[in-house]
Structures are given as C-alpha cells and as structure tokens.
Image 1: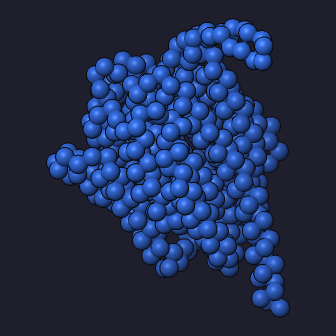
Image 2 (image 1 turned 180 degrees about the vertical axis):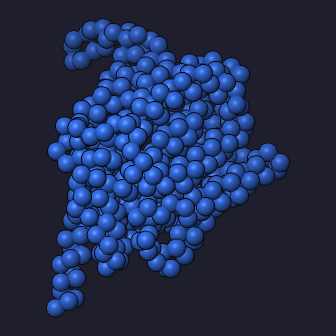
Image 3 (image 1 turned 135 degrees about the vertical axis):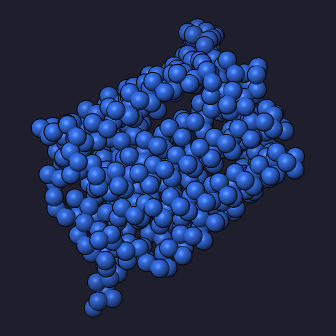
Length: 458
C-alpha cells in the first residue's frame, strides 16, 4: 500500500514540478529566441558588429547575476513562508524586496553610465570597435532600474508559485524588442509581397538601434512586472512597511550574500574569460559570442527546472518535511538528466547548422561548431549540478555552492585558460576545454554534497 501511495505521490509531484517549470522554460526559450534573432540581425551587419555587441556581454552577466542573487535570498524566505503557511511574512518580504530594488537599480545605473567608456578597454575589445561597443553598452544600461525590477520581482512571483505572470511579461518584452529591432537596426528599404511593392521605414541605426530596442523593451517589462506584483493577491507589498525591516532583511541577506559573492565571483570570471578570448582576434570573439548564444538555448531545461526545485525545496523546508525533500530529489534528478541528455544530443547534431544561422564566415562557423560539440557532451553532468544547487538555494544553504563555483571558475577555468591562451598560445578550443573541465568539477562536488544529504538549516 505504501509503495502504491508513493507512486501516486511521485506522479502528483511530477505534475507539480512540470506546472511550475514549463512557464519558466517557455519564458527562457523566448528570451533565447530573441537572443538568436538579435544576434542574427546584428550579425547581418558584419563580424565587427557581432564582436562589438558580444564583447561586453559578460559584464551583463556580472551585473544581472549580482542582482539575481538578492532575489535568491527572497525566494528562499518566501518559499519557506508559504511552506509554513505564513502569508503575512511573505508580503513583508516583498515590501523589503521593493526597497532593495530601488537601491540597487539606482546604484547600477550610476555605475554603468560612469564606466561605459572604460569597460571596452578593460575587456580588451579591438580598438576599431571600442566606440561602437561603448555606445551600445551605455544605452543598454540606462534603464537599469526597470531591469532590476524585472529580475527581483520575477523571482518573488516564482517563489510564490506564480511562474505564468513573469512568462507572459517576458513574451511581451521579447515582442517589443524584435519589432523595434526590425525598424531601428536597418535603413528604409523596398519590399515586395506578391505583386505589391512598398517601402518599409527604417532608422538605419545599426548596433545602436539594437541597444535602443532592448532598452525600451526592458523599461516596458519592468513597469509591467511592478504592476503585476502590486496587484498580486498572495504577495502584494501594498500596505506593508517600505522602511528597512531587519527581521526580514537579515535572513534574506544571509542567504543572498554567499550567492551574491558566488555570482559576482563567477561572473567576474566570465569577464576575465571573455577578455582573454577577445585577445584572440575577431574570428575567435565572433565564434565564442555566437556559440554562447546557441548554447544558452540548450540550458533551458536545466535552469527552468532549477526554479521549480528551489521553490519546492523551500516549501519542504518551511514545512520541515524531510521525506518530501527526498521524494523531490528522486523525481527531479532522473527527469533533469533525461532532459539534459536529449538537449546535449540535439546540440551535438545541430551545431554546424545553428552556427550558420548567425554567420556566413566559414572560419567562424567551423570554430563555433567544434566548441559546441565539445560542450554538448557535458550537458547532463551540468544539469545535475543545476538541480542540486537549486535545492540548496531553496533551503537557504548557499555557502557550499559559493565555494564550489569559485574554485571551479578561478582555479580550473580562468587559470587554465590563461595558461592555454596567454602562455602556450593555444586558441578558443583550449579555452572551452577549460570551461568543460569546470562543469565536470561542479558535477563531482555537487554529487558528493547530494550523497551526504541536503539537510535543512536549523
């Protein structure tokens, strides 16, 4: 009888996981589709335009992931509050998240505007495209406050089990971005549909047009998600205190701070990694930029499931239900491994064709396809790490992932890439080999953590 009940419980849990995960996966899929379209549109302007847009992309990860870490602290707190049935605490936490969103948004706006001219130099961007890269970066980061709201408020809604609202807003943002790209990147041109000839207006701004389109879309998304949060029945901060509340902030920041250090440290590593690749020349930079864009679509199953894992693990922790936590792992891990194995197989087979979507240069296509096939083999191992890290974020244990990621990034990836590219004179393939070694190390460390057991903090 117990085995039958467990099977029913597992089936019910699987439906819950998929209900939470699919909107996040669709949202990320659409974001990636827009990245593909952006890269293809900008790529049609030439290799220099692709390199200018991609050369500062890792700074975007650095800033975005630092803000996301704050969201993780609130995710853990709110998921636990819901598991314990304390809706008032969840609303108080949402109000404190609004406060921090304002502080972080203003801080990062000022910081990025001040540094926009220096970042391309620090990133070792080729001198002939530095001015273009700097202008793109400046415009992209002017709406930093609504971008911060999109990240943190989206995390709050997902922590409360609402993954559909962020998905719908993400689709709206992507639609705005693509439509504005079409009109702002290209000049006016003649078009023909059947026997009709007409002129399509275009601003002809090129790379700058792509930045303006993204900035407008980010602003619209931030406003929309703030309205949704304010009106949300379960987690609206309306009527709560917006002055600092240490009773809420302390536990949230205790979880967020190690995750922030982790994301800042690993993202800074991405910046150093990209800077070393930028020094390899335009072909390597373009191949790396396009391959990163292509690869991001194949991580969607992993990161979509991670959000569900963090939310449900937090609920189990709030209810102090160890048995539910173990059953979550027994359902999540096989599902994730199946999804990421299929994802890796598709990437391996389709790598050359996907590279051809974004570039007509054979050297860029060949190099990008090679590194994509290399990383495709490591996808299932990385997927396991993503899920276990999600469990640990949900229960509020973020110190171990911080240590694991910093060791992997700086000792394996960065030191290895510096040795291979800067001292031994090897190329992009050696850099991606170091990245894969980093992913495999994370798999081993998180596997050890899982075998020892993920215990609730006391």
